[in-house]
Length: 152
Image (tube, rainbow, N blue to C red; front, side):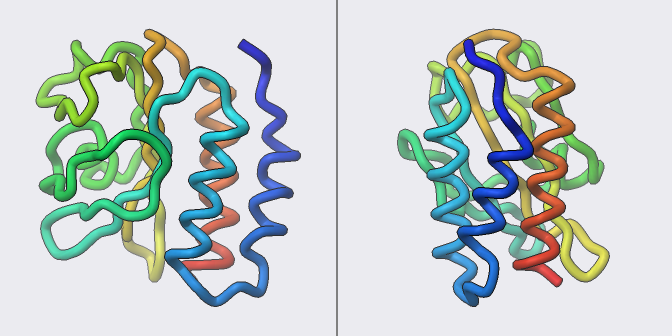
C-alpha cells in the first residue's frame, strides 16, 4: 500500500471546491478524489444529517445504506459522539451496519456546520486495519477544508 500524500490531496480538494456553490457536486468530486487517491478502498462518501438520522449523500463504491439512525453503527456513532471513529475490524464494532459485507475496516470523520455535526465522511476498506492515525489526521484536515468552503 502506498503512503497517501495528504497535503496534496487536501490541495486538490480545495482546488476542486473553492468558489463552487454546489454542495452535491462538490461532495461528489471530493468522494471521487478520495476513492481514486487512497489505496485499498471499497467505499468513500458522505452521509448528511436530517433530523435523527444520517442520509446517504454523494459517494463512490457499491450501493449503500440509505438511512442510518443517529448513534447507530460506525457512522451514527461518529455523529452522535462528535468524534472520528477509526475501526480496524468492523465485525468487532458493536452495532456495525453491514452495507457491504466485503468491508473489513472503516474510518468516519464528523463534518460540522454552524457549530453542529451536519454529516460524516465515511471510508471503508476490504482490508483489516487499513486506516492509521496518519489517515485520521489527514482526513480530519480534509474535512476542516470542506467545512470552511461548504458548511460555514
